[in-house]
Length: 247
Ligand SMILES: NC(=O)c1ccc[n+]([C@@H]2O[C@H](COP(=O)([O-])OP(=O)(O)OC[C@H]3O[C@@H](n4cnc5c(N)ncnc54)[C@H](OP(=O)(O)O)[C@@H]3O)[C@@H](O)[C@H]2O)c1
Image (cartoon, rainbow, N blue to C red):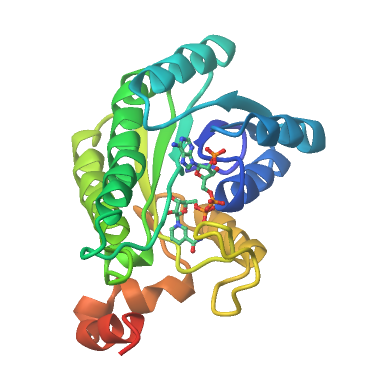
């Protein structure tokens, strides 16, 4: 993917990785539109950074369709969509409240991005040079036992992305999977002070560097995610799984 001259929609760009990447793409000479549920965040982002914002609830099919109509009418040159939106909440299968969390997680992290791709892909194939970026996780490759459905949605998105890339082979649309390691954001509500997590700026700088140096890469893998990404191949899966589970 080229890193300048695009018109990029980041679905789930009101905070964390999405917002940080939005700012980097904006500074690199791309037109960026961020979308999310929090109207006040969208307004703040526009005021602070001059980045356009649109409302989106990715769990709502009509909201995705509305976003598509609005963004493609305003920006007929839209050529990249990043499916960034995600939630991550701990679950315990013996706790009756956890089924709600599991269902919400699937709607947001799996059904949402799949609907988004189905809605935007036909439009993107008509652009001369386009990209769909999905966002999985190191946990797609070794699950975190405390977040079973979250990890499962990310594994499923990895699988979906592989097939999507194959189906769009021969079109103008490049399909890229970004698989972040643990990054300092508020994804689990813990704030930005988790010392074990990769600093957000470091992560987005490495991502932009990889997109520039490997424009045809299928996956964007920063160094920190590789122990998870390649655990199975390296023969360390059991060890890494147990370590993540706190054993
Ligand atoms: N941080 C990490 O360690 C890490 C690691 C691996 C993968 N990831 C992935 O990276 C992505 C971004 O997460 P983050 O860490 O940057 O967390 P974050 O700051 O909580 O960002 C999550 C984003 O998703 C949006 N979102 C959530 N539910 C939505 C919905 N129903 N409709 C539309 N937008 C929705 C949020 O916007 P609104 O609240 O405004 O709707 C927000 O912009 C997620 O897919 C996450 O799974 C993160």
